[in-house]
Image 1 (cartoon, rainbow, N blue to C red):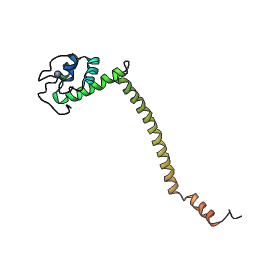
Image 2: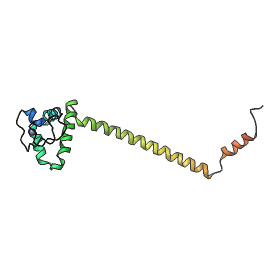
Image 3: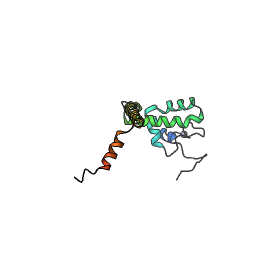
Image 4: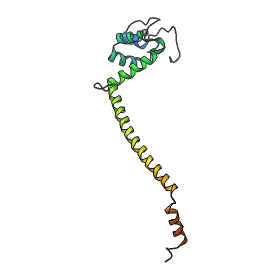
Length: 144
Ligand SMILES: [Zn+2]
């Protein structure tokens, strides 16, 4: 198929295909919306609009355009899935989860500190359980 790179390909990029226009050699969309990525462009176009996407890409340095398109595609996907919250839905969920985990971590650290203190006390004072065990090991109570 068309998995390899075709610099002078006659096939339009996904954006130009979708917009039914001729793909020019320096098309702003071409490097980021390959001809087989029609769905990706359709989603981004539906949420942001092709004109806004091209304005965003022009303002961004070329080396960051791929990341820009990836984040726009992610945001568009989230907005289409959740028209009310979009990405914010995922962010809010993760923030709630983070607060819960920080709370759990604080509890775990507190318990650990208490165990460490208890262990330190047990090793510094002569252990009762050891002498206790020695006592029981020396006498067979089960035999009676
Ligand atoms: Zn194009």
